[in-house]
Length: 446
Image (tube, rainbow, N blue to C red):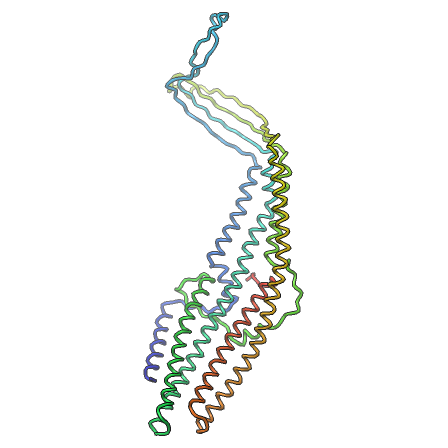
């Protein structure tokens, strides 16, 4: 059994060496992982692009306030010219009409047009909503960053716990392998029967099974961490964290006064409220006309012969104002304004509901954090006691006072206490993250 273990360890060690030679290794603490995620996470990059698109959309809308210069033209060849009906000019008193073909077979025109919006309700709305649209786009990015920090932190600590479990299981296997060898030596010396050997073998095999399970779990946790950071599998990640460091972060802060308006969700609703208020103002201004000024300059080319079309230019120009004033729309403006007012009221009600919801979330997160701290202290004490018990029983076993079964039981208790401590530490750490998230305290500037 020991020989198999040595071969297994040798294989895993050298396979890891070969694998590491093919991959770039990156060691990250939590802050470095978050900073890297802000640069690489595809979903976040999409939101950056959406924020930039919002800015361009606003500029595109505001561009309609600037003078608009256009050029259009056409080239025509009539095979049959249009017909117009005119009175008989040779004999006007007859009351007869005659058909006359008008125009020339070949014609072309070129038109330069310059227009300027003077009054336009749609453009006024775009200008009024522009600052709040930019703010809303930035808040969407901020909201995702908060979710990213929370999810990445959880994934980071899950990887840490998974690797700690692997480390502890590997230590247990080394210790249990020695115990198995000792049991075999005692059996050969006739000091004990083969029951102890079988018990040691069962314990070792169970721990090896757990190690395999922990290794598979670690792969899943690492895949999740890679996802949130935005890295592919060609880079090997190593998390930099210690149990002592995590414990030092768990300073209770349960007396701080929390303001629900600090949450990003509330600020998003305030931006939505401002946008809706601008929409109401737009509905109230629906009585305004659309007024624009224009200037056109035209070049006209006419000729009965195609080759002589551009020999003569006939030009004309004009300036004018264009007005569009809706006089009666069947009450549509009134109904649209009422709907916009109800939408604004719903947004304000959503703010009130959010305050209640956030207060509940904070209380739940605070209670969970306090409970996890209490359980952590309990499991930390249990771990210390289990270590003392195991050391004592191991010493007594060597002196022949305790039997091997008691050693196995003490070791099982020690392993359970260590795992429980790790998981309690993870629960306390993630509960702290959830509390900071509920309070709107997660740092997203790295």
